[in-house]
Length: 404
Image (cartoon, helix red, strand yellow):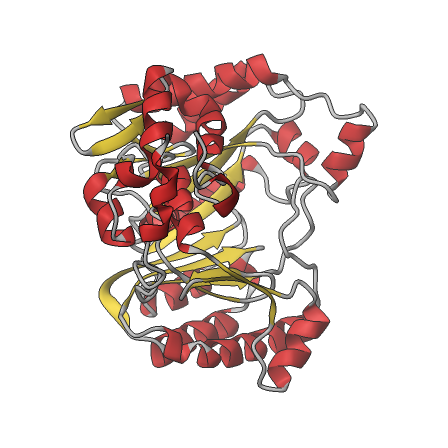
């Protein structure tokens, strides 16, 4: 018999009650909507942006009591946060500092599209503690940028990075995508060569995902989206991983690379299955045994906050069993894997007590291995990690509690 029946020993109060030390803030505005994007984004006039900033500050005030510890990470995502005016940026950041305790050494990140930053905006960000910028380059191929529906040109990346570095920002990241329509391995190699010409510390390299409701999805269904195919995409991923690690970068998460010691604090909060607060249109949060999502309707968001009401559209209670399963699935995305010590601290029970059967099965298949006290994916499984993660889905559920 497997050890799944021991799931009843997990205390509902264990781990999940740890206070959140991270905050995600969603700024939904874009110059235009990219063909692959299914995020909560909007192309909106100045009046709507003004109303949104006012509503966002109200929502942050409503979240005040959720943060009992200093925040170690504040992450502004989008959308394009740097589409806000310098004054709007100041309003939001001043609100964060007035509302929450923020650790002196906190990582405060702003996503930015190339070409949307100005000296004035960056100086406002810097004066209010923003110490990390993440630029959504996606590719340096002009034809591919057009195919994605991006508004910037490759040269805008050069100019935006140079401006940021001139002003003293030294924590910089770039997003690149692969598996794009008509993209070749040579395109990826060229993009990485250009990436290495910059003096920056972090790379996020993502597969293109075809999401329902996007133009790419429609075109894909119609057979009008010439994707490279699984084999070519696997070659692209392997090339990125080989080149980055050969150059001495840490492949610390399936899609993320960093110079040693320069990993994204906010990324690690997600992958270590730690709680985080969230504010903004469509934002997802996870704290106090609850996963919540805000409304994606701008009208509802503004009206709910005008009434002094949290703009939450859905709340889902997370059981101790699902929490433990998530720790395994998320943690195995990391190079560090899932440590016995951290798991015990989070869940109050040893990892093997809950997952011994699954772990032994995965080791027998050669998919995972122990490195001292950490369970990690073997390198060959990184491109197909979902096959491993799926093995943990639902194994602690009541209907399977006594299964073999």
